[in-house]
Amino acid sequence: PFLINPGYNFTGNATGEVGSPSTAGFSSSTTLTPNIKPERKIAKEIGAEMRFLKNRVGFEVSLYQDNTYNQIIDVSTPQESGVSGIKINAGDIQNKGIEITLDGTPFKTKDFQWNSRLTFSQNKNMINSLYEGRTEYALGGGAAETSAWAIVGKSYGVIRSTIAAERYVNAGNAADPKNGMAVLNWRSDARTAFPKRSNTWKTLGDINAKFRGGFSNDFTYKNWALNVLIDAKIGGDMVLASYRFGTHTGVLPNTLVGRDAQHGGITWTSKYDGITYDDGLIPDGVFAPGQTITQADNTSASVGGMTFKEAYDKGLVEPSHAPQFYYRYGSSSTGVADYWVKENTWVSLRQVALSYTLPKNIISKIKMSSVVVSLIGRDLFYIYNSLPYNFNPASLNSTSTAAVGELGFLPMMRSLGGSIRVSF
Image (cartoon, rainbow, N blue to C red; front, side, top):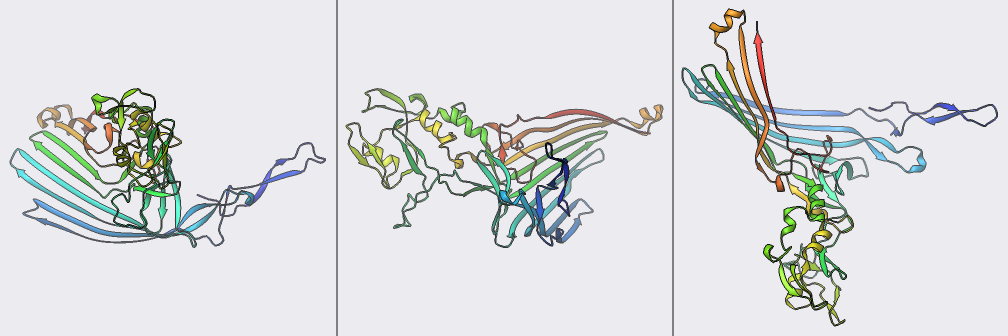
């Protein structure tokens, strides 16, 4: 994956110079740290397998721990160095988990049999150490101004952003119920409040699942066989850029809330222009200390430390216009990434396969030992999908292990097919 002896090589000749002297360039865009080592992995595993009731019920369990040392990664270097980065050995990344399988034959007769298999797996990874002097490393896989990171003491793939909402903290009262609420920005020209950006790195989620599971069932009746497979991913987060831009442009159903009186919008007559509106919202959040708002009579009122609802109840603010609020919530200049990081939990009907084996007395006449005709459907539908508006959980914008989300998701695709399997 890298040159072990990068250096300078001849790249051609200089034109317009006496004697056409040779020119040289560095043979790699990156260089190596001295004494770089090969990657090293130490794996430990213990397991057990048991079967009961004349092989009708089986149980398997496996516990494992893998530690990978000296992973080779690129660290950026100053531009004047002549290379874009230096390859180094990163410290210790650990994966440990458990895998459990329970299988059995709940029902069995001469002509009919039902075999079932239930699986459960849980993997927890941890960054134990990185390079000396470094506690975090950007993994890439970005979407909608978020990216995945490896941070010492955390898992591989935490989602971070510099445009997360700033959170209110009352330094003098740790029990203040407003602590943790979004701090609100005020846009006087639109008379709208919306969450303020933190402009510092904040952790918003984790791409890793809490656990995964599967449930497979095989039914056979005489020459017929049916397989039904369900699998599931529980937990983990996904960045939805389409949700951000759909909110920003007002094309998603969530932006209907408050758009007019029919959709819950507050009706009021503005003191500023005398016009009656019905698209009012009460944003959830707290005004920053020192925030003032110009009133209709040109006086100034302090709303610092108040929630928007408190300021509204005191007559110091009018409802925010829903279109303005949604526009700001997803805007490239004011949007906050908390809003488009969503839990990615799903349960999928992954496969249904129906097959028929032709009787022996038929295929023997055509000199064949077996003929099996099958119809197969894969990725048929999601029984449960936590993402809003049927977003596709599989529509990551990258094949990287650090991919955090989508950038314009593809529609869900199911495949239907058939096969004829012949044996002689």
